[in-house]
Image 1 (tube, rainbow, N blue to C red):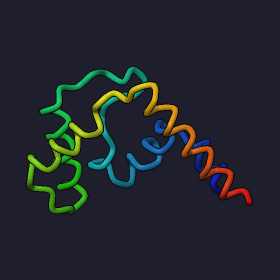
Image 2: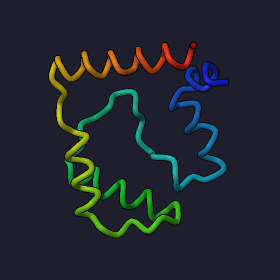
Image 3: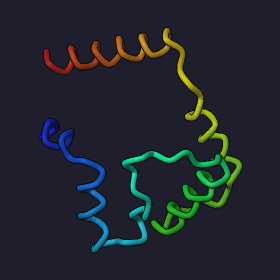
Image 4: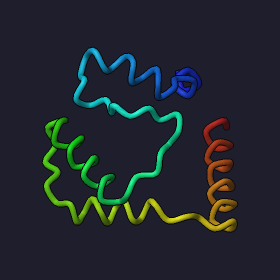
Length: 94
């Protein structure tokens, strides 16, 4: 089942959810991954959370989270992340 979920694309998920819950599906085509300004990203996250019934009312917390995840990783950090993922995969196989 895990392998099957890995094959599901964003486009497929959006197409499936759009008729069921159109407010939660972004209207943007992610094929190009356009660059968004941080303020727009924060606003979109808050809007999506609110449309899903979540209490997301603190833009500062969301902004801090976006900043943490928008930093580019160094080569060393990427190698470490890759190593950790491989170790996790090995543990799950044995």
